[in-house]
Image 1: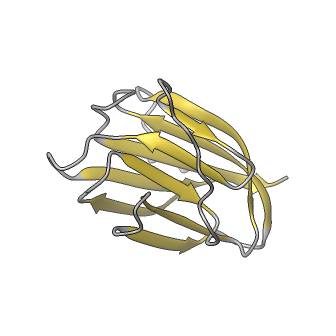
Image 2 (image 1 turned 90 degrees about the horizontal axis):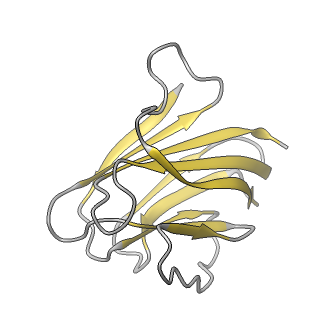
Length: 130
C-alpha cells in the first residue's frame, strides 16, 4: 500500500530517513546509501529538479508497489522509537513525517532510479514490525 508520495526540492545531495530524534553522522564515502540502527542516508540529485520520494507499507497492493526497475541501495532493520518515519534532507530544511504504526524495529528497503548523485526518484518500503 502506498502511504505517501512527496516531491522534495533538495538543497543538499543527501536524503535522510529514520526516526524523529537526532541524525547521526553517517559518512557515505563512495556508497549510494548507508544506514545504522536508526537512520539511512541516500545520495540524490540536489538543486537541479525535484526528487520524487514514495513511501510504501506492507502488504503491497497489486500493481501499486515500489518500482521493480529501481536498484536497491539499502535493505535492513531500523528502529523507529515513536513509530514515525522522518524523510528529508540532512540539513533539516525539507522534512516530511509519517506515522508508520507502533514503535519498534522494522525492515526498510530503499531503492532509487539511478544509484549515486543522479538519483531523482526514491522508493522506501517499510515492512511489518520485527
